[in-house]
Image (tube, rainbow, N blue to C red; front, side, top):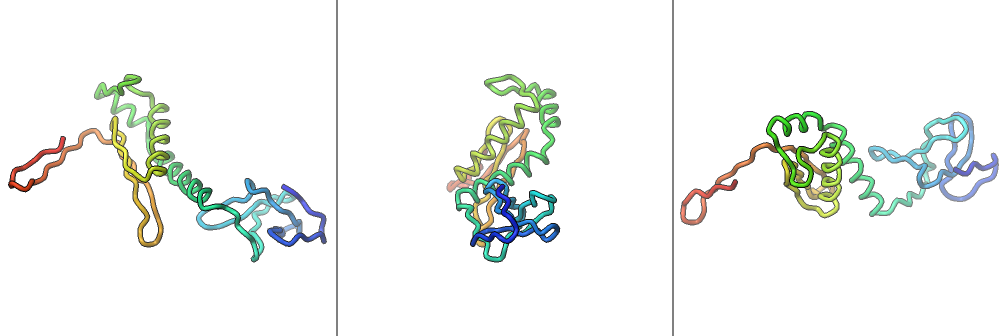
Length: 168
């Protein structure tokens, strides 16, 4: 973060702390974005400082998409109880082909990787009990992810000749 001497003004993106009067230009990595709010912390007093009215947000669309992906993945991963999934897999003697019954940590790592992949590729994923649904952008531009751990899944439908076809 670059702190400027009081009175020195550069044209763009100078944050002014309402608490101590410090003027500073935060590095891109120090500009925080949360739920549509943009702010930085004052380097002198730590106060949360909103950007100036003429602030130019240089976050690219790719950076924005990456940030949104990480927020979605973090929300899901922090909510899921991977210990419970591991316990269920152990009780069912459920093994993944490459590692036997995975630990809770391994399940979490795999779910995290698969969530990112599903978001980046804009597609669903289902394997080893992990079910991830990519929710494409709706009319408001929102997109998302849905996670489930599926122990059993079955479906059926009528085909053109009126016979029931099952989907294992």
